[in-house]
Image (cartoon, rainbow, N blue to C red):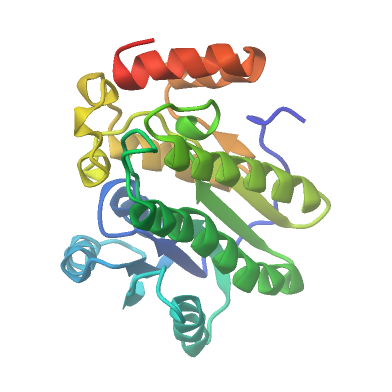
Length: 271
């Protein structure tokens, strides 16, 4: 099966959708598109003011915000807290969107392990833990969808973003493997692999110094719309933008060393 092809899926009842990293960027726009399509949302983010702003933005949409959870997903007990809050709503979770993530930019020898460890706990551990908590219920009910935000940075080695790229490589590989495991079930898994996107993400990770930040950036609205459509179509991989799809295809064909060299040129302007 081609990664970009959709598959037959069991329609959801547009029950609860849990969305992490909902306060800004792609997450904010995902909240908008889900609510516009009638999904009731549980929003999760560390940014309380950002979540309040998203709630206000969605006030007139068909879908409602059933709960907003202000939590750092890297904290001890955070996953339990989210699971308990969802359970308290007494409605089944139909869709899980693992979008929360943080970047770290710079040569590995110059970045701090504290920052890299936090990145791994959020980008990898929290995503895996939430999937572990909510997937069994989806299988038991015979319906469900999971959308994991990966990145083109996870498809080729990315010098100056070694740990970030590695974390997104995990998300990409985990999503494809899980989708294959679940192929004979009504539950689908989709990896959203955006390229460079116009959000505050780069600034938070120190990536405004990178050559990528000077290039053409995709709108988070476009990324969210394409991601939502791909999820609902049951696609395993969604890559917004035709240029990015070419880059994705090439990355699967080129030797790793050549892909890494091209990525280095893109991210650092050298190589």
